[in-house]
Image (cartoon, rainbow, N blue to C red):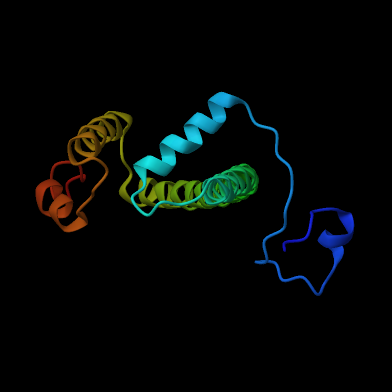
Length: 155
């Protein structure tokens, strides 16, 4: 004879978690009709208890997965925000260092080649067009061959 469910039987360690306990559930007639429909739909003729137990297991899994999903989305979102923030900082610092080195290099080249303002303007315009055309991919050897004498002052 199964034991009745109460706080004592729930806390009793000698009762196995899979042992069935007897309890009272008040359900509407419509719910009982739904349970009976599920019994007819499944071919293995389960009992009402089996249907209710499976429904509780399903709902428990669904509810806990929703809680886990909400928690994981929150934690994952915060982690991604932190990673993107630190990545943005690293990229900004790298761009600053790159800009400083490029400025030094530009001043060195300009002082060595003694470019006029007009020559610099033509070179800059051609560079802008080239970078747009190649989507930022630059081939220095191709540039040297094409522009060897175009912008350099005569010797």
